[in-house]
Amino acid sequence: MRGGISQKGNNYYVYLWIGGKKKWFSGAGTSKRKAEMILHEKAVEVQNGTYQEIRKIWFREFGVMWLESYAKTRTKPSTFSSYEDIVRKKLIPTFGDRYLTTITTVMLQRYVSGRLEEVKPKTVVNEIVAIKEMFKHAGRWGYLKVNPAEHLERPRIEKEEMEILNPDEIGLFLEATSSGHRTLFLLAILTGMRRGEILGLKKGDIDWHNMQIAVKRTFSKGGFGSPKTKAGYRKIDMSPHLVHELKKQILRSAASELDLVFCTSDGKPLDADNLIKRQFLPALSFGPGETRSNSIRKYPV
Image 1: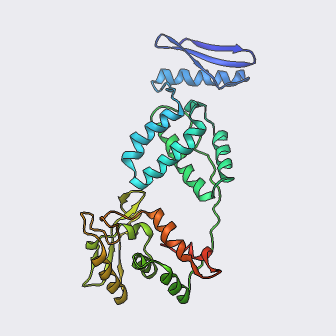
Image 2: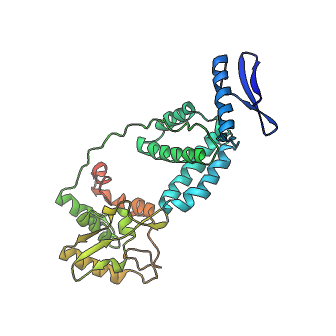
Image 3: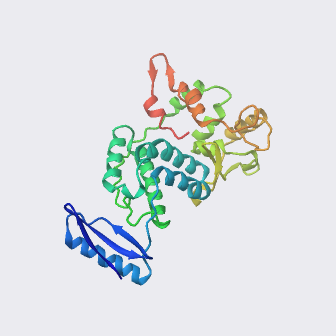
């Protein structure tokens, strides 16, 4: 096996003849001893048949490829939508013009620190999940030898103390909601169902005889999906009052193939963001100059 060490300026570089071509390896820096170790390591890999040449690719190219080849086909629609926003709007503008192999743990940690000055820690944690998934697959697919995201540190998320409404406040809140959405909020209050579960609720999920609701799916970011855990699939008992209100809601709801309990006038799913901005937030005020927005915003709708 032909190979050796070459010094250029203060730095040492390793080379090996592989398949009739001279391959160069960096990473030794100013240490000749480290260069000798790299030379030995690469020679052993070639001799054992485990040597794999790292393919160069721009981060933006790999990001798009990862979204299409993995995230789009192997994750839920809502998860893919989140990953796509993170990769295209945050990561590519930051790292897009770098080769994947040149991105280091320090660069990623600086990105995390910068984002913490702009958004909440929970948002940054979600971005770190996407980063770790991307670089994990980069290693599996032969684009990296060392994963720079492996030891990326996540920020601590302080647990917020949850405030709940008392019965009088619940009554005031429901009175402030529009009549077309009051049953939706009543359902959330009486059952604790999540927003996506309510928006994905179909008429066939309601067992009128046993007065129960079967939670089978969620709707988020334009797509239907399954609950995140097995415990998410559950049956919830209904009070007689809720049964009465849901029956009236179904009479009001549009008929469509989706068979949704809460939907637009043409039977399509409600827009979650519009629901919050146009219905939920305006209903936070209990009267002139009186508001409990900080506590109501945490209510699980």
